[in-house]
Length: 443
Image (cartoon, rainbow, N blue to C red):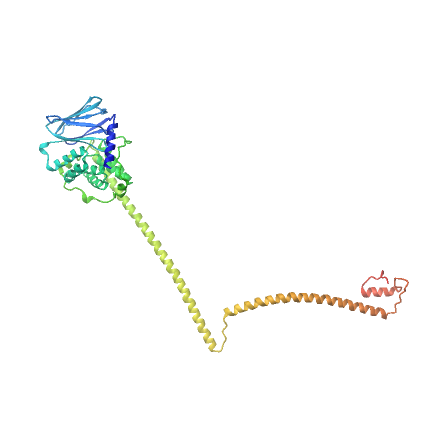
């Protein structure tokens, strides 16, 4: 990861053609920050009398409103800008012989010039400034070791340690150091930009916006559309990073009070900034508390609902089993009582009929009977029809025989030469008797 970042920085240096100088900010007590719109290729030098620091900026334009800046701090007198060979020369005039560190920050593209008095430097500060020299030379492992030895006394050392960890893609260690540095009002603005990116990568938009606004405010950036460069994190590292852990116990309680006071009004160009930051921080903490409480309540409600559903399911299962048991017990009790009564009836000489068996037998016999009746009825109807036909024929035959007998016993004479009966009276009798028209009968 370090190699990739170095390559990106190197490409930025080589492709840089016009790096505008956007602002010069006087950081309280001997520290100056120069902000550019992108990374700049620069070199520094110190005069022989150690009272003049020169910073050569190639292919750079001055977009500030002036060329001379009155600093008037303990060690710095003034800063002025001159044009040279298509670039700029930034000269810092010192009040007395001093030393300095100059280093460029990864997010703001700013160059920080930190002037110090060699005669007042302490052992802890000496380790910190040695760490800055290592950082300027991209010797990150050496700078980590030196910053680690001085971070408990100097918040600036902890700030730089967090940024170096970030460049080394050690996100967990970087997040820890950057968080503590931000709580102690570090004067290095890129700490806030780094935290804004980390929170953004983790999806915590509220905190990301808070630190991004703090970053812009510290650099006096009023452009709401300003976009600062961002580092590339390894996905596995950002996924495994836990940002919600409370690390208040890691806060530095032994930071040198002089340094804390020294940078307490970092980039404070108007008197309302500190007040605004306190209000924003308070609102953020209140919002975080509300969100935490809301998340807790949602979690509690979900747990209670699941518990209620579980209890209801257990109750329904118990109730079903209980009903089955009661039905079995009732059936068993009924059978026992029935058997008991049956035994008593039999002892007294009575007869006990199993209604179930009787009904089954009766239903079976009824079915068979219906089949037999249906068959017999069909056969009987056929037989009756035959007998009915035979009886009618016999009746007609009997009538015919009777008529013949009556005819023979009568004294009716028939003329053989004619087909008609002579005796009309006989015709009438026969017609009335047999209910036939015999007027046309022939022999």
